[in-house]
Length: 524
Image (cartoon, rainbow, N blue to C red; front, side, top):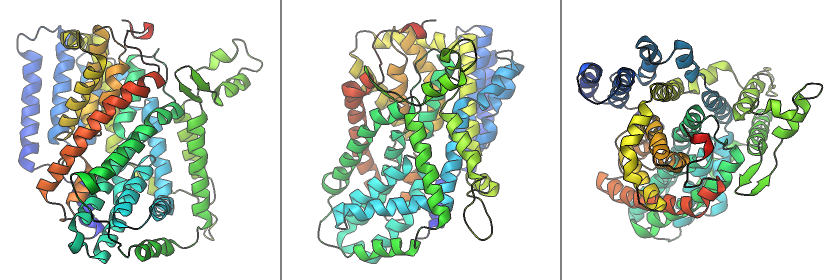
């Protein structure tokens, strides 16, 4: 099967009847929440709830295009007097939105020059070419690429390579090998995205919503996030490999002549050209700048970064000292600076082209996703402005009473995982994070205690093709029966929730400095 059907599967729309029902149902729900008596909400809270309900229905049913639906809060929240237009508009160009845009630009450069393909094949070749080793290699390679490139792009990169291996080696005598390889690619991309702040949309929404709702919260640097979550990703990839080859599926380890196929794929890339080498260098420098900006902080241990030294330089000859420039530079600054540089650096070709052309960026950037980030942050602004988040948080906070923290985290993770099977993880994260933040605050807990596991769990939908574009791509191959995807996906969901709960309790909480009590910066 070619890549085209897979791409169509990734971009598939809901049934027109569902979209039509969503349009009318969303408008009806908007009017009901806005005008119906009851609910126990103040007028502004009722208006914010009505806008959120309308936006959520349009998102979930695609009653409007995703990007267009994401603009509803920007229009209706000011119109209904919930937040000023300036505040609503600022959400769409929030620092986190700019970071994700910059990351998309860098990823476009990697794809344009084929750097990500070379990296992926290098990983596969190093792991080995026996059936089980191939499953691990493709899973690990996709996860690695997905750290830096969005999940769908990582899957579409590895899908034709994996399909070529399966087709060439005739998987009929080891049918589970083909299923395991394709599921490893799909699931590996979702798992890998968890490992960096720019790897997947829920991570970005988490950081943006946290900064929006709690400006005094300690920032989570790129290096700190990777130090905490990369071990989780590595463990999850190994657990997934076991599930795909020895658990839910059994893959024979008889020797297959795969080495020639992988070698041919690498040989087809040829020698690295000047443009590819320069783009690879830009990528490495960008990753290093992100990781070392604020250094790495794990509990009481800290490795200093370059941002404090920059603040010293910025303060030369000025009053206030380096503290005056705290927060001036963020990961978004690095991303945008590097993005601009890509349009200036020569690619070393005879035609005089640069590393990136704006047409390439326009074609590859998911603009609707950027607007969705803005819509989610705008809703969070509305919740906070009218106190709706506190009302919902107060009503839900008794559910936390008396339960062990690890159990609360596990229940939240399970809830988000199950819902992500049916709804976009980005939409789900946008709607749930403001609510979970105030639920934790009203219960006397650090809001990060619920927000971070929830955002990560939103990436754990593995059972259904509709859960994520990578799942849809794998299923579109026609080689994976629905019953098999359900069975294997259930295994992965359960293991993922258990692993997330355990890792969060064992080292991630302490690494991010999260206490069970309410910190001063989160107090109303």
